[in-house]
Image (cartoon, rainbow, N blue to C red):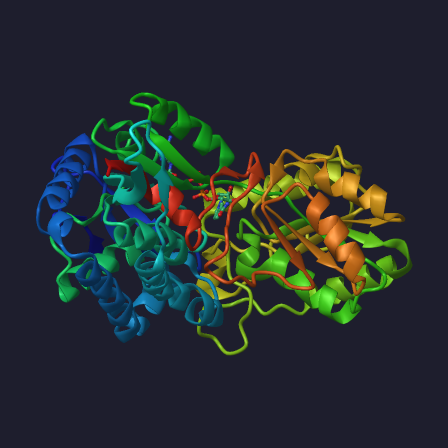
Length: 486
Ligand code: NAD
């Protein structure tokens, strides 16, 4: 069993309170690590270190050198690829191919891509006339915002944490990170990488702990934190926004989703079924961009439901590296209780359970894990709890529709607006619906496909702000205008 400490000012440190908590494996509930629980003292120390680094070597470092160090971070993650994959597999229990082909490589890429964005970002300048005829020139420069509080979730821990740390550091900020209590490992490993490549102490700090009345809340309330970037539940975002209001601190929020998938009869049906299967069930449905509401045009409804059911019934449960495994457990028993309560609620509200709805039979040690079956419902009204609320599990409700207008209203009738997938061969329709859907990200005939330079974020209660490419600079830098009279 491991011991996981905080990473503050370039050093691994224990909690002064002596408090710790256990990180358990989602696969079999075994205790994997004892994690130090940070309190106000650790958050104070991390924030002080981060502020010191801004005034010190990091703050004075030429931009070129800073950016080349971030390339070195990415290279070192790649060199230690197996360690990161093993840590992420232990934390999440998800299949090896998802972690090794998507989550860890994206984590490394997050350092390179933002270093390159910052290197190439243009500035603006305006010439103006003055009453004396001499004129003046205005130009803008971007300065780091300062110390950024990074609060991240457990569902793709390394990818989502580095999606914030990468741009924050590329822009010259320093960070205090609070990874999810469910997934403390990769953030800690990243501390070793930072030291290995010579990132100055205090630039990257990690304090472990929980949310309310713990490290998370202490970071968001800290008066020396300049801005807070958060990915997690909308309800948590509300609490963080209240904390950030003290001191008028900026926030960037990537929040929940209840995303629609719209399948028209003119689509390539096999592609649509495969796309919806991935978007509803990848990572055991624990993806903010996942599809939990599926609308299928009536002529292909029956075939769609039957084929998706067969795909679900063919998943292979097991440990991340067991041959053929493509379906992992939920992150914890606590989360499983929540997901299973939604499974019960669907039945109480009159759903037809097409497949799943319970817990699979697992053998040996795996019987202690947080497993659930992929689940499909039909026959519920849009007012049903499982059709309205984000479940964050491997499940979806499928409903037939008849017209484009009808499905647009159905897709938009939700408080969230993160993403939507549209499956059609009709290009005009794709453009028409794409611009009328109230969501930040629209995929046509694809899912989870994105150039990292594009804006990412949600509408309505799915978030505030956009991250990705130059859009991240809006949050991680402060624009300063300099006006020079000629
Ligand atoms: P969560 O909100 O429970 O926790 C996220 C983080 O916030 C954790 O580190 C937690 O400890 C911390 N936290 C909790 N309460 C806090 C408080 N009061 N103050 C400060 N920090 C606090 O979310 P989760 O369960 O870890 O993640 C799942 C949620 O994240 C889902 O709703 C999902 O849709 C969302 N998500 C969104 C995106 C996106 O890009 N929009 C991406 C991934 C996940």
